[in-house]
Length: 245
Image (cartoon, rainbow, N blue to C red):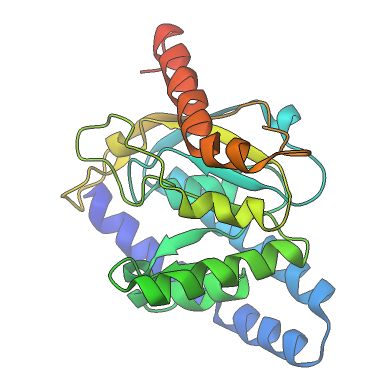
């Protein structure tokens, strides 16, 4: 029953947001990007938190003091489709765009709001298109937006942390911005990998100290994916040891 109610709530909320989406489009066409972005943040953040609450999720948030001022690339593990509303609703007050796989962009109405948020849809099946997608993400970071990336490329099957791919870190390298690792825990308990059934769960998000890339040489950038992966792995290990279940 919870799953059915969640999907009803999901679509009704999307329909209720349509007038705001049209207003956001008008603001963008008028060149008022400050007004556009403020409106999008006011709508997307509460929507995302509502999706978590309706699923029966309670959220524990830590480490927001580590978030730097100015644009950065945020990297994390990826466990569930609920990672997206967790990021949009709880990763600081300034709702951040993210790089998502292109399949997410096929969901009606969701794509529209993600585009308003300047999210990028990554085509992993076409290397040439994927390069264009990364360049688009680089553009938005250059414009002053932070970007959230899941460097594993997809949700892990077994819950263990996968290898961090280098492409995500090109966004930081070409903009000379810090990389902020963060950990998400137990979102797969809300919804698993191969199911649409929803279950109540306590989930957690922990932001770790940023990796300052100022003065990085080529070798440093080459090693950055592994360093960020180790930071996230250490963070998850610590959360497990502290009783995040």
